[in-house]
Image (cartoon, rainbow, N blue to C red):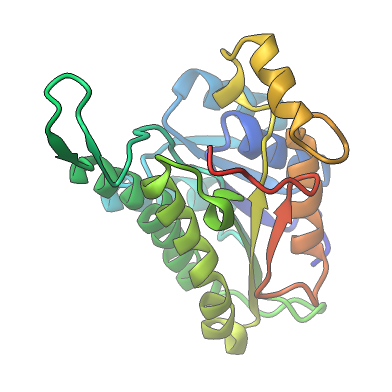
Length: 261
C-alpha cells in the first residue's frame, strides 16, 4: 500500500507512546489520521500537530468505539489502515499465593483478569472487526490491498513473567488471533499483522527512576537500550506498505528473552 493523502487511518492509543509515534509517521506521509484515546489533552494536542482528528474512545466500550469510528469517518472517510496500540497493564499478582499478613491462601482477582482481557484483547478485536467491515465497502487499490491492520501484543505473550498472567493472556490472545484474522480477511484483500514490542521507552516507564531504566536496558542483548517508539512506527510502516507481509507476529525487542522475574 502506498501512503498518501488518499488514505485514511485510525490509531488507537494514539495520544502517546507507540500510538503517537505511529500517528505521526502516517501523517508525515500525508495519511489522514484519527486518534482514539482516553486522554483528551494529549490526544487533541497530537491531532492538532499532525492535522488529524481526535476521538475520545475507550476500546473496552462498543458504544464509544462505534462513536469514534463515526466521527473519524465523517472527518476523513473510511479508513484503510487500522493500528491497535491501546492497552493497559498493571494488576500484577500470582495465580494463587499465600497472603503475607493473614498467611492464608488467596486467589488471583478475577475482576482484574477480566478488565485487562476486555481492553487488550476484546478491545483490539472490537476495533479489528468494525474497521474491517468498513474496509469491505472500499474498492481494492491498484497494489492489490483493500486495507491493512497492525496490532500490538508484547514479548510477554511468549515470555510472561511471574505475576503477569492477565497481561500475558491478553497479549497471547492478540498473537493467537493474528493468523486467523489474516486468513478470514484474505479474500477481501485485507492484511493483518502484529508487533510484539520488548522494553520500550514509553510513558509507562516515564516515572521509573533512571537506575531502573538503566537496569532494564542492560538486559537487552543488542542494542543495550530501551526501544524507541519511532522504531515501532518504522516496523508498522513496513507491515502496512509491504504487500506480502501478512499473518505475522514479529518481535521487536533487541533479542531479549524475559526471565521469570
